Length: 231
Image (cartoon, rainbow, N blue to C red):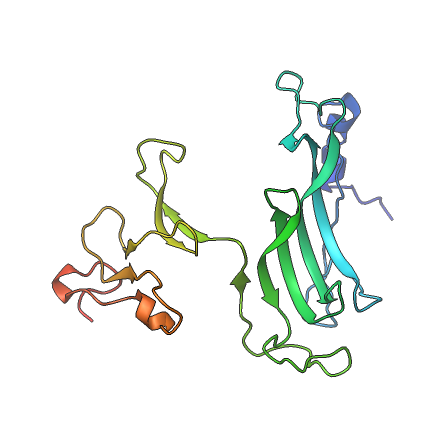
């Protein structure tokens, strides 16, 4: 039987590794299985052997005196810097303090004090059930509630002409702090109008509902630019 040539990316790029042109360390995986039977197609599996364990992947950067610490000439870490976690992502079941069941995948990034904070979560349990415990929480949920924490959510478009974000434009930003009072939703960039516009009312007391504070009224049909103009 004749030998089969190795056509993997690792083989084709071996010359770069030998010459030192490509010095990046990588974990290379090659996938052939479909995911339609027995969960095949997975390249890694994380098994939670304890209820309070975490299955996270992390990214670290060098930090010195609260600043990212790289030499501006060599691009190497500065002497005396310590590597700190900047990004975490993964999942867990139980909270660290054993006070609640998280049951979510989460993305965390460092805050202003260098502490990791959850910014985006996707639960795989119904977190609204206060009776959730280690031996009675239903696995899985029909409709999950994707949520942010200490974070705004922005949709960008183009046409900012100056400043730090020149060339971009925030078409929609949803959040608590620095939330614009009025945003338009446009289906076609650069055209006036818009079928809906967002109107945000500042909170004036604890009795108001969400609908009282945030409105999404429809524009007149002659102005609409979002979807079909005839419906």
